[in-house]
Image (cartoon, rainbow over all chains, first blue to last red):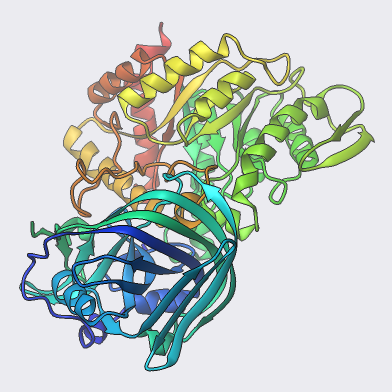
Length: 246
Length: 361
């Protein structure tokens, strides 16, 4: 049976540290969420998922950006690079790299939710027919893509998998489940164009290569970042490795 | 109440020729036994690229072998994926007619549109088109099977007047079904006079609703041909053993393993946002944060599983029967976790101790 084969120790060196599980929750209004999915090679999948997660076939990388004009930390834009997976039987994306343009947001997202956030430049620009996401760190491009030809969808037609992230927690190294809910007011599917991706700059394993664009979507609405509920051991499947923290 | 067996050809790693060969030949042995024991159907799915979960990409070939090795059991092509990138409708008509001849008129034809990005993406299929092409296929197939020449000017394909040969033995054509994964597809089946071949695990309440809706709607259907197939089946697992503890240990191991393989599929809905796919596929209900537990919970295991001693299974089947189902199809194994001799013993015990409670009436 398929399972991840990534070295947990390799990830541990870059994993954020959380002092407690008392994250609280946050509500972000008037959020713009953009998600782009690509198929990736099997090598990249296996190098990115620890044995506690099992993969999808085909393997995928998902880039998700949030533009939040209002937050407790001021406006911020965040971009995550995740590899698609399953925790138990549930769809998940494991955070590989995360960039945000606001230092306070970066600190909170690292220490309260365990996201592997680094400071950088993230731009999510939209026009009538075009979406552009650009992510850079220290002036070096980590990811850029355009998406065009919006097709309107119903608010429930778009579903985003929950993120899991490896972090040093009060219980040791754990996969932290970061629950979000998006109440979309408007949703569109868009077609991906001209992706460029530098895994090393984004903090993603070098073997992750984008092999085929799948689809992208753009939503406007309200995003809830929920208090933490579960963490999982990184080297045991979730059926036996899940711990409640709420 | 009719009973069928249902082949996914789920295959454990490593995918050596010996392992794959064993899966297929074990299935053929199960089909021969099912024929002897009085099962009504043997179905084989069509799936592509689904590592471990299903290696049954050429069901028409499997079913030709089944037809040649059995005498009585009906042969379920369940289901042909009705998108032209995978199956041209003329080839579907030709293959099915040939199977109907070889099986001496025992063919049932299931139709489907695929629910995974793994498959649709692999064939570069536009997910927004599959419902349209499925609808076109089910309307055109009866015309291609009818005696004489046919032509078609349509959405996904067109053809000038030709005589599609051979013609099926069953007249005017074999019974037509549609696989039901997404809620609402049972109504698509009913409106067209097609059988409802359930392939997603639905709980008792959901199945009862679907069944009632189906039978109500089919009364006023606009059938795709002069034949109306008025049947509702669901998919279940079967492991029957005299000792309920042994049954649970072995059978639920099979259910869990199959569910895990199922979870590796990339569902169209999660990959490609669209109105055309509203479900995350079989065995996976949409999580409700307020009601579901953590990732350790095996929420995909459905109600009414036919794993247990004969009494447990009779009770479960009577509940299913009370909902109005006309048949149940069983997965007999998952990734070969149950040794073949135990699968065959389970089938024999089921036929001896369970079937008479339903067949006698």
